[in-house]
Each structure stands twice: as structure tokens, then as C-alpha cells.
Image (tube, rainbow, N blue to C red; front, top):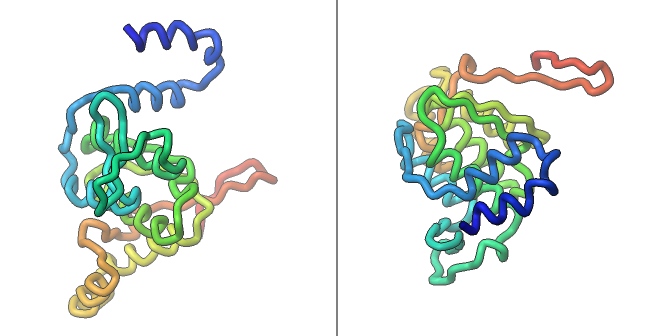
Length: 198
């Protein structure tokens, strides 16, 4: 009843809002069961928890519990980056299955540099879970980490060295990529064209 009332109230106000935005609102409102069909689902959940710094609790409303505390924060009290991570988590846990496509505009937005690295690993793990991931980014940190994951997964590094690097930097094998799994493009606003990055 409340949702219907809210929808009726906002119908006129939001009539010019794009469909993806409305879809995001619907996803965040939904209370569906986890699909967990993704091959590296536990690693994906772990990375999301590391990036957000806690876990999202969905009961009557959404609350956030920071890692290592007994504090439960109302969703209105968390940062904008945490709210973005919540939506990404919802889509991954409840919408994606092998063969799905996810498009994320600037997934690094408002993230600390260390978390940008973790976001790159999360995206790589999604790719290895048979998800097609399309992003736009301005983050050198994310691009550098994706490059690192490609180098580690290329097979050109001795296995012992690879294991040592993965252990030192806490990289799970589910994050490793090959160059065939990644395509990069540069958007030229001046020429209004997209060019393959070489």
C-alpha cells in the first residue's frame, strides 16, 4: 500500500526520469532472494564487504553494519559511495546470472584509492563468473589494477613468482584475467567517436 501511494505521488514529478534510473529504484526496493548462481559468489560478497567496509542488513528498512562493530546505521547516515556499493551489491546478488550484462558508469566514484583497486578486482571476478561487464572510468588506479590482473593471469610469469605476488597483495585467483577477456576504448568528445585503445 505504501509503495503504491509513493508511486502515485511521484508519477508526475519523475515522468522524465530515464528507465535505467527507475530500474535502479525498483531494484533497491525489491526484497528478493539471493540468486547466488555466480561461480565466484563468495569471493564477490567478500570484495563487496571490503569495499563498503561492512554489510547491508535488509529487514523493514536497510541498515549498514560497519565491520568489527555492533553499530547499525540507518541508510540515510551512510556515505554516497556506500549507497552506490549497496545498489551494485543488490544487482549482483539478486539480478545477475551467468550470461548477464552489467553496465556501470564510473564504478570508482567517491571510492578511496585502495577501494578502487578492490573494485577492479570485483569487476574482474564478475568477468570470470561469466558476466559481461561494461564500465566507463577515469580511474588510473582501476586501469592499472586491471592491467596487473592481466599480467598475473597471462601465463608469462613463473608460477612461484605469481603465487608470491598474489599472496603479498592478497589477490585471489578468481580475479585473474587474460588479455582476451578485456577490451578498452577511448571516447573522443572533440571528434564524437570511440576508438580502440592500443
